[in-house]
Picture 1 (cartoon, rainbow, N blue to C red):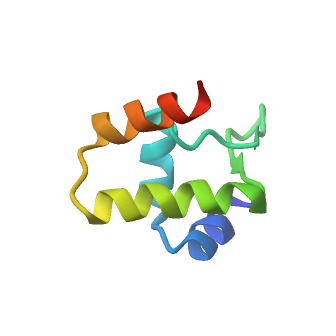
Picture 2: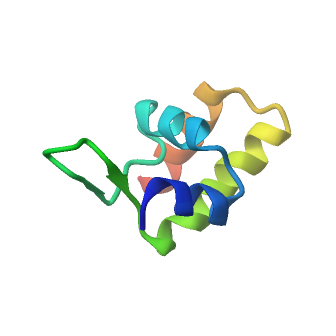
Length: 73
């Protein structure tokens, strides 16, 4: 789904989704090589909402990143 629809579904701003992508936390499922437009999957919404929840609790982004890496490992 396009980034705008994903952002609305995850209750984030498009700017926040782009920022989390830049931090490596919320990488798009697909990036159009021609336009650079980001596309996400519905399965990524829980990750996005978890990041938003942690940020809402004032957990610093570097800590969120470390938590995400620890979960993957």
